[in-house]
Length: 489
Image (cartoon, rainbow, N blue to C red; front, top):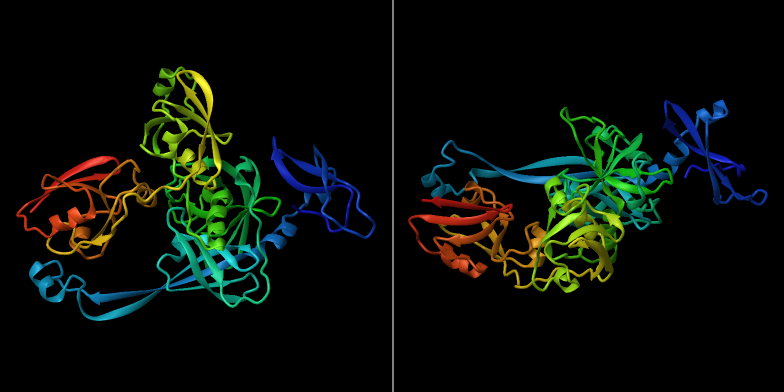
């Protein structure tokens, strides 16, 4: 909050545009003792037209001075090993002698990337984006006063595109930002974006929240973002989106652009999701998210009409998995979920975000419509189980799966890889570069259903089949809800 240091009786703290003019919002505090300045208590809010030139010249400067020291530059270094390539690189005969990685002495190349980060704990815990430090062999952070520290990556969560760093050899405390409750953020709220765009140094831009609960962005598995028109550019990734109280509303993550620059459409990961990941890192635990145990569908206009609704709203339960929290709570196929803990949900992505940010063990209240009647269902937030065990195996040999790492599917593995947790069988969790599986286009998340007509029930089955010699390989693979059938010779 921008508060006068002089203990004025009335403190004008922000300007908002309204109908082509300006309104000054005054906070009327309780009186302070003489010569003693304390944070004022808000007792009344009055909106009015600015009464003086001084009020028209209000500045974000006091807020920036408080927040900017907690935003850092993040420098990530990657070492990439390459080999020379031959024009015969894709020739099978050549590969038998020189391998699939090229030939000649390996060459090491250093790649560097620049982003931003936010200190969220005085002990030197820093939040940034996963894509800023992905694959880094060395990470350094620089404070606003240009003090540099080496940092360790203590948690890297690709699903949320977040990473947690910890400063090494810290002496003393660091300035940090407090988390806002991002659920309280509203369209039209004033915000500041602080980061290091294009590597030019720390920069502050202002704007408003132009949308909340923005889905279908595709920047992480949990597509639920705060959208802002504050200018965000390359290098701002991992930086802070700050409200007028100096609290962290979100971590700037991505932009919509056609030119590589800011078009006034930026997306930030909400603070409530960031806090979940940061708390896990501070406590030394892995990130654990609640498992729903069912499938959901967007409510279209036709579905809404069939359900007797005046407009599309909520999400429709299309499947309830056996032995899941959804089943234990009594949810049924056809139930329409309107709210999670009192918050509206209008898409499976919005539901996924709301559910994923509930602490494990907590009660989750669902407002449900069933056969025209409203009811409240309370379910317990529980972690996804790993049954059966994942039994990780790396497939080698002359088969289409050469170079693939595979796991047995369980609700936990499905949650980690972003596939339907109702599926069973074997899923690909990794594909090594330059191998047969990569060249054939196999991808992480592919569920292998059948090989030459034989059902693949577990990783041992797939390993056994991969060691057999077949003239033709007939594969059935499920990818993104679609069944792919192909024959490979």
